[in-house]
Length: 290
Image (tube, rainbow, N blue to C red; front, top):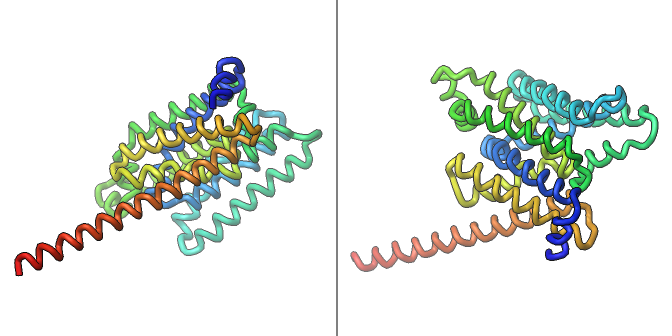
């Protein structure tokens, strides 16, 4: 750890990686909470994997792959949302098809692009150490947009997440806010691609929020705690990967998975202990009254 802290003061690429991890944690904390509570992780995964098509097309035509990823993510979110609303019975199959089609389109564009596209490979598997300064500004802009929408429409999102039928009765345009929610998830996916790549993005999107859900039940508090957990995981994973020269993205995800498993087991043990204490106390009260 001391070696990482020393290197952090000397190398700008590590400083950029640290900032990228913290910026990504904001998106994964805020939007990951909605994904976990609404149970739309599979939809988020479909969006994440379909962005490869937009990235491949952007590079093929000479544009920034992040712009292609953002466009593809938004289009995929709207398509998947429409599929869910129109063909709920075949939702899993159609989302899986869009998932595979997006990946296939991306691979075709990559194969036709001259040379070896190292940037695309890093976006596929993640390389937080190669995040350029321009991407940090891009990520900060996406974070600001996410926070602005969530602040403005938090009540509507809550209604859609918890009870769509009740939201309709209250006069809330459920379709509009459901699609907007998916678009914001798509923006978050693009945020996280910089850190862990689109293959692992689903884990970072859901695990910090799932850990936070073990300890708090308020959506606002869950978002704050998930953001904090995501930041700790990103920074710690980056530090752990530096010394042994391990890939940072997979290290971050393994750390997130380990924290989730430990949290789940410990909270389950606590609940069981409390239940046994409550049962024992109830038996004593019953015998005393008798």
